[in-house]
Length: 422
Image (cartoon, rainbow, N blue to C red; front, side, top):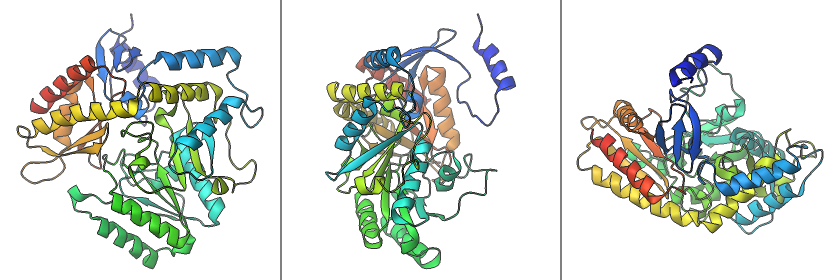
C-alpha cells in the first residue's frame, strides 16, 4: 500500500511549489465532518474545503442529485444548448438573495470568475473603469482578482503589474484601530487625490472578510457605502463567496444588514463541493453586457447545477441557518471560557458559524502567528483540521460543516480547548 510519505515525495517531484498544501497526508474518503487519510487516520474537518462544504462531505441528497444528472448528460455548454435546471436555479437565486427588485443571475465555475464577471458587468453598466476594494480583502488569484485583493503575501508577490484603475482603502477594524470614520475619510481622500467618483464603476466588499481575518463590516459602514454609491452612481458589489449559504446564520451575510447590494458574487458552498459560482444583480445591470459578453465553457455545468439545487433543499429542510447559530454558540462559549487561561487570545469574533479567534503577544499586543501555528499544529496532531487567516497568519477561522453532529462537534471542541491550553 502506498503511504502518505510516498505520495508526498511524488507530489514534490511532480507538482509546483506555488500550489501551497497545508497537510502532508492524503484523503481517502470523507463523510459529513469527518475525513480519513489513505493510512486510515481520522480527522475532524473544520476547514470544509475552505468553506465549500456547509452541507458536509458526501451528503446523500447531493450525491443522488449528481448521479441522476450524470445519467442524463454531463455537459452541453449552456450557451450552446441550454438546459432547464440552469434557469430554475437562477430563479431560486434571484428569489433568495436580498432585495425585492427584479434580478437576474449568471453562473460560472469559480469564485474568481464570479468576481471577474461582476467587474465586467459593473463597467459595462456604468461606462466607468474605476473599482475600489479594501485592505485585507480577498477576491481571487486571477489578474483582476489579485488586483482587488488587499493582501500582498503570498497572493500578489512576483505577479505584477496588475490591471489599472483599482484602488484600496482601509477596512474598518476596531481591534487594530481603524474606525468607520477613518475608512470613510480614506474614501473621501481617494476621491480628492486619485480618482473622481464619476469614474468609479463599483465598490466591492466582503461583508465579513475571509482571508483577511473574519473581520465583520460594521452596519453603519455598510449604510454609508450604500449612501455614497447612490450619491455618485457607483455600484455596490457584495462578495459573498465565503459568507454565503447559511454560514453566518442567514442565507447570506448581507441579510444581516438593512442594505441591498447592486451585485453579489457567490461560489464555494453553492454546489456542495462541485465547481459553481454565480453573479446575481439588478436585472437592468445584469443585462448591460451584449450577448456573448458573458459565459464560459464550463459555466453552470449541469452536474454542479444539480448539486446546487440539492444544497438549497438541504439548507431549508435541515434548517442549517438555525444550525449555524447553535454550532456558533457552542464554539464561542468554549473560546470565551479559554480566554481566562490563554492570554494570547485577543478577540473572538464573527457572525453565526463564521467565527474566528485572533492571537496577539500578551506583552506587546502585536500579531502572534507563532502561537497560531502552534495551536493549529497541536490540533492537527490530535485529529482536528483548522485553517489560519489574517494579514500575519495570526487568526484561526472555524468553518466546520453546518451538518456536523453534536458528538463530533463536542469531540472537536475538546481537541481545540486542549490545543489552546497546551
